[in-house]
Length: 116
Image (tube, rainbow, N blue to C red; front, side, top):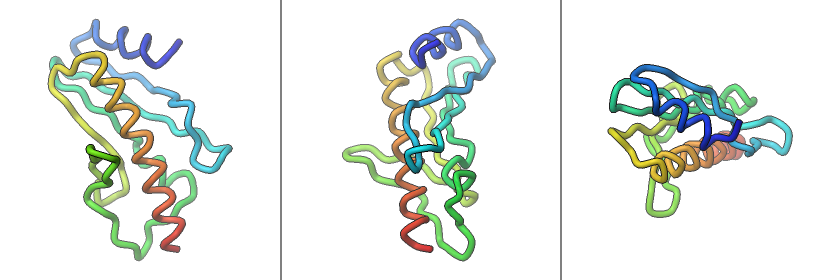
């Protein structure tokens, strides 16, 4: 099932979550996976620490609070989790959020590799 189809299915529930395959990779091999959650009107998309899990170490490296991606930016937790949230996003904006979190996760992975 495509990401759009999975998100459309998720939209029909008040409380649920779905795992998404972005089609992106960290290193040409390791896939970038996301988790989208819906709690009534609030949506969240996260990489669940995928950049760290893919092998980029965050030990002794100060993680950024945010990563800029053009005119947008994604949040980064102190544990290296890349995420964005929205309230009642349009399907188009939700697709954009997923794309941004996926690209942000890769950017964090690359930043951590460069710093180590």
